[in-house]
Amino acid sequence: MSNMIAICDGAWEENIGGALQCNGTLMQVEDSYFKWLPSLTYEQANELLVAIGALYATVFIYLLVARFLNDQKPD
Image (cartoon, rainbow, N blue to C red; front, side):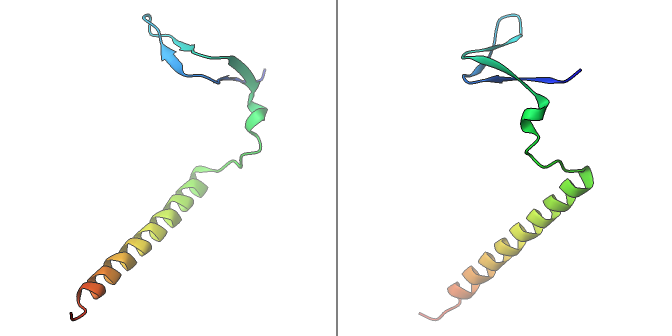
């Protein structure tokens, strides 16, 4: 048995009973539709998040130091 995924080309809306309904055309695709996306384990995802966080922190600190040094220039 394969899993099916519902795709809506419009907006998803909640009706009065709390069920979701598609505001456009509803399509069903098999889970193999997304196989071109690389699968990551939790460890790989955590490593990726750590690398992204380190890069963000490095750029943020660089910008703070550059701003500080720029403010210290004599007029």
